Amino acid sequence: MEKKIPLSIILIFLINLKLILSIDSNFIESKSFFQENDPLYSSLSCLFEVEENFCQNGDPLQNCDTDIIISIDASKDALPSLLFQKEISLIRDNITLDWTNFNKVALTWYNEKPFITYKFGQINSKSQFDNFLNIIQQASGSKLSLLLNELNNIPTTLGNKLSTFVFISSSTNEEINNAIQYADQLKQKGTLNVIILGNIISETDLKPLNASNIFYWTFADYCIEPLRNFFINSLDCKQQCSNATTPNSLTTTTTTIPPITMLSTTESLLSTITKTYTISPTSIQTSTISSTIGSSLSTITDISTISPTSIQPSTISSTIGSSSSTINEASTVSTYSTYSSSSIVPITTESTSTVKITIPSIPPKCNNSVYFVIDHRQNITNNEFYDQVSKIKDVTSNWDISINKASIDVNSFDEVKIFLLFSQQPKSDLTLFTNTTQWNCIIAYLGQNVNDCQKYCNSSLLPIMPIEEQDHTMDEFLQNIYNVYLNELERKVEIPKPPNEFSLILFSKTGNQTEIDNCSQIFKNIGSKSITINPVFIKLPNSFNGNYGSITNYDFSDPDLGKKISNSICS
Image 1 (cartoon, rainbow, N blue to C red):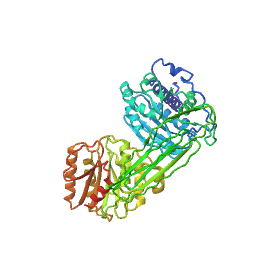
Image 2: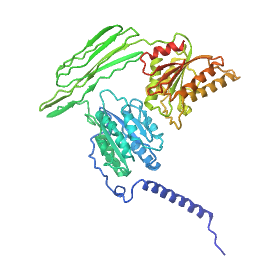
Image 3: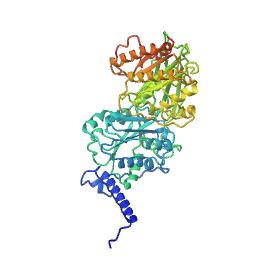
Image 4: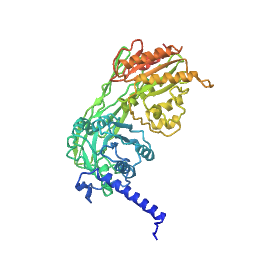
């Protein structure tokens, strides 16, 4: 009589077989990442031995005067998903495990294009950093040159150095050569440090970049601790881990004070000029500020000569009441001071003086509603996106939103995804905000401002990461919003209807004349429905300079843009 195999044994066999195949597939996926006969893969020692750091608390950010950029390789060309998750885990569970001050950290990643999503001051906790880290997705391509170029545009903390860490698994000679100029610019701000994942590329391949430090990581766990030390030792700061509150006597010390660039901004509502004096044992002549006020010329010259033992802070306050005031500033100090001493050197002290200039903004003189549209088509960078948000914030800073109800929409193929995590729902293309708190909330959300989001939205900041899978021109956006508008007007239910008269302020990186002509035709179609609309195009940098006909249009860089927009709303 033939003996039958019990069903339970068959099930156990199938489960074990599946586990074996799963393990083998993961092994094959990892193995395929390395070249054949790779000594790094089989080695039981780390390629680079890094001396142990001296951070007692494991947090290099506590006393280090540096900003840190972490750029993650999110390309799937040479990095399998298994190893990509190891990269994420390395950063989340090891390198940043004991870090606390994430305001000094910028989180970026790249594949076919860079994602400069979380800049300095936009991450306020370890848990928030981990959440942002966990939502990064892989895609094809690896554009190192585009990444380094964008990293140079991230505003840094005044007075801080910059420590940049770039993970990389693959690249091409062309990409590396294209990245040289941007690598040089980053090194002028601090250190450029590269972590090579695997061995598809080598230190020799990256030699043209002349990186400050390079570390190979073959995904071996026993190399994690040396890599943690590599991060700390590669930071560009005077005091990495020592207690900065304890003054130390310096003997036989040579120090070079780098050039200082004094930054200033001019905005439609508030302009703050901050002058920072860095005092060295030798005398430093500071800057000269020349301000043109109306038709008269006023020059403020402030020359401070400060000795090593005598420091007198100075403050200059100036209030300008004319809305037509313009300010031209020449405020760059480029002074090198190198000194050497064999005795105790006095501690360097910093003094800051601030000039605040208030320029009244001009709210609209009518009560028309306003729809702002931010352009986020495929060729718009993250910086350009945030610049548009900032411009809208400046233009409306003195508006009464209860009088001029307003909204912000985004020209994007994935606009729904952009507003998916917005706290004030429902949010449609026709949603109008009716008070200042609501308005500040959407500004904070789109500008990814952590503190303002908590203040005005009463919620933690959630990320917006639209990945433009296909281009979306402004005429396509207008056609969509026109269709939505007509549908809302025809709805029978008792809901607030969209206004019959409004202004449409379109920030646009227009591509060609056809796009402009199509927009013009849509405006005519809207007008045929007894709807009064005041369209205004704000031409972004590198926008097609075509013929807009009777459509009002201004340049994004126009210093009187706020005033012109306000006047156009009521025309």
